[in-house]
Amino acid sequence: MKTPNQTYLLIHGAWQAPYVWNQVSSDLRQQGHQVIVVELPGHGADHTPAYALSLDIYRDKVIEAIAKAEGEVILVGHSMAGMVITHVAESVPDKISRLVYIGAFLPASGQSLTDLAYSDPDSKLGPALIPSTDGLTLDVARDQLVDLFISDGSPAEQERVLANYRPEPAIPFTNQVTLTTEGAGSVEKVYVKTLNDIVISPGLQERMIAAAGIERVYELESSHSPFLSQPQEVVKVFLEIGKPAKLISAGVV
Image (cartoon, rainbow, N blue to C red; front, side, top):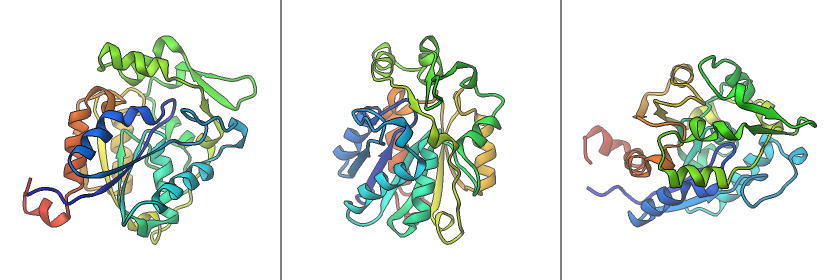
């Protein structure tokens, strides 16, 4: 039985941009689904200055995109965007059928991305970070970008990551989320683990999954950016996630 058409809203992570979803979004559309890819302010072609950015600004951009969709969306966030989709769900839980975290930060109320990152001793990202002199952006040492983000990707995909790299706005990393049972807590959450990830370690992923009480968990043998290195596998998982609960429980593919 074919999965009913869904609307997937895809949010990129830090040091990346909408291009990372090109293959996944194309494949999902070929399957008949609607796909919306959001460019967060201060990323890609958007040059909002770093001092003007916050997690609230990211949230508002995503809510604008959700408002243009018909019906509920499956809201997907990678890495830093796990913070964003959680913040969005607190504001518009009725617009989201489920939240999907793929190699992503998953905060509890009162936590920031920085709080979670500091709790991950197995991450290799910290030593590679280079703050700007004004503290408004963070660079990643260029000679470590590929190993950190896409060690399992093809040379062409690795080069795309390097070619599209921009320093990351730092302020949103320190912004905490405030969550309620009625808001983000009311939305189903699904986690896609990236098992060879050295940015958000599998250990931290497991701890966040346990803290959030997530029951639907998928696994990919991938580095931090499986949508680039293994797009077909990501699409398979997203299609499975998009099935109605009654089809999943019946084992219908």
